[in-house]
Length: 90
Image (cartoon, rainbow, N blue to C red):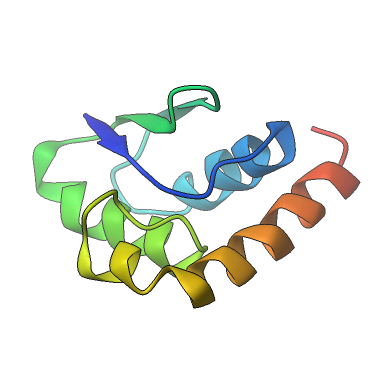
């Protein structure tokens, strides 16, 4: 499944997103398109809501979602996630 999200800035963001999504039950893989602002997730459709919720909690809300519209706090979370991803070296 493909989910378009906000706030993806760099490879550090992508690393954090991949690590976070692998913790969601049913997710077997995740690829992040930094330029396109999208996440391709290998998971059953039944996991979509949990995946979207995990992304939002990490600061990467689905484009056009209620969380995305409240993007000030989401941006702050994504910057923290971005920094953590860069420090982990992935």
